[in-house]
Image (cartoon, rainbow, N blue to C red; front, side, top):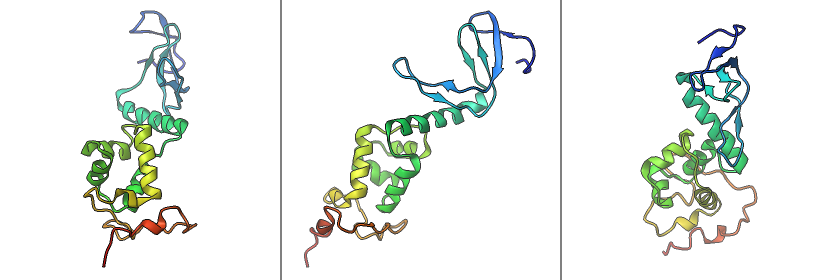
Length: 173
């Protein structure tokens, strides 16, 4: 690696003298769409072939930032939002995974920001947050009255949400 201000370095990818030190946004998108992510660090970039050389110690953080950017662009729930909904419902990660029909570690990956949830999973998580009664009969314990093992559910501002009158329909005395 060379220092900023030195003459351009040799690119290991194309062999040209065109490598510079930069901190400009990195294109993390695929061939169909652009997704520029601010790396927050300096890295090497070849002006000739366009290849970026990111330090190995920065790759995980860069991937997490790209996932945040992609989620925001797609209008998906953030990692913190998914965790908050799960806790509000009184579910463990395995419990939410069971409701969604995904693997046990998938919810963990969504919540740690290493994987992006599908649009379908995102919609179902939103439905569960708005209407926890739809989870009834699945065999997964869910806190309909906000007394889950992790934290109380927040009270809704409207209290007139569709479905609120059905929350306790299954209980018979």
